[in-house]
Amino acid sequence: MNTEKEKTNDEHLKQALKVSRLYYIDNVSQTEIAKKLKISRPTVSRLLQLAHDANIIHITINDPFENKSDLPNQLMKKYNLKKVIIADQVGNLYKSILNQLGKLSAEYLNSIIQDNDIVGLTWGQTMAAVAENLQSTSKQNIQTVYLKGTVSNSKHNNYSSIITNKFNAAFHTQTEILPVPVIFDNAETRNLVLQDQFIKEITIKGEAAQIALFTVGTTQANALLFKLGYLDPEQIDFLKKNAVGDILSQFITQDGKIADADLNKRTVSLPLNKLKEKRYSILVAGGIEKLSAIHACLLGGYANVLITDLANAQKLVKL
Image (cartoon, rainbow, N blue to C red; front, top):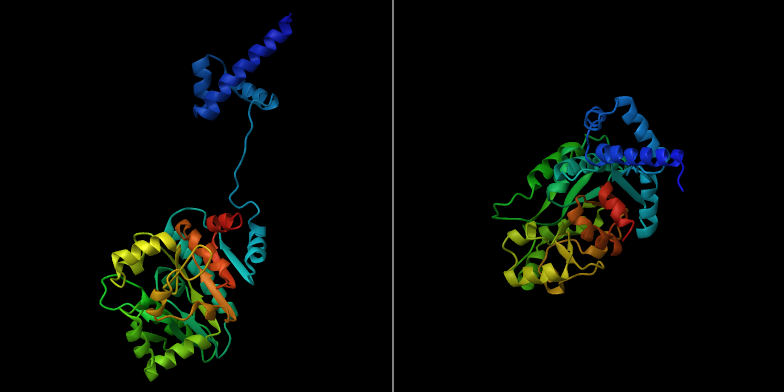
């Protein structure tokens, strides 16, 4: 049989539970709870403390930065990378993520570049974010060259003019553009064009680049390569089903293999295996929609440096 003291304790616990639900679940202020239950404000505070002491309430704080300092080492070990840089950006606003990645990438590039280096570039919004954050360097005889063909007669912005101008200004150079379509209608025409001496010299310089700076694309409906008119609906449907994204306009499967060998024969781009030969092969990519493509790129061994956002880093380590 319960004693009067036990009954009193039970009543206090029930009231503490009621107060806790109002305060933590319904977001009612302590002052409003006091009015609602016709008790004093200090009594509400004491009941909340009782709820804590009685383990009625358990508070958990999900710190997005917890163990962040160990993430680079985990990813370096998992994907055999020489460097991983993670932005503090934890929100989902893509523009903010790009700005953070652009700053980090520009700083890292400035720290590793040496006199007489050749830097291989690609176009796109991510590379534009890097270009916007570049600072003028004192390094001598830097050359910059695009690692893939360009986009012609398109209403879609590939940001190549911004990238070219900013890299020219920062490195006191004249970036060499591959002045041919990134994808041809057929392999025969592509091969014929690549025999041109001027074009061949640019592709050779791209292969000789000690640093490659690139990103990955997706196979979502809004992917830029799907909008340029190079691919017919059947090809796009195939890539959506069999690829997770592209590197230098070359589509890859989830395990990092080439998704469409015939399409690759029509594409003007540095062969992906050549990325593995670079002193620095730097993948810059953010936004959770790029997670699968980033993972596949790393599985394929095409990058030895990764610069990404925190959300992707946390998911990559668990894949």
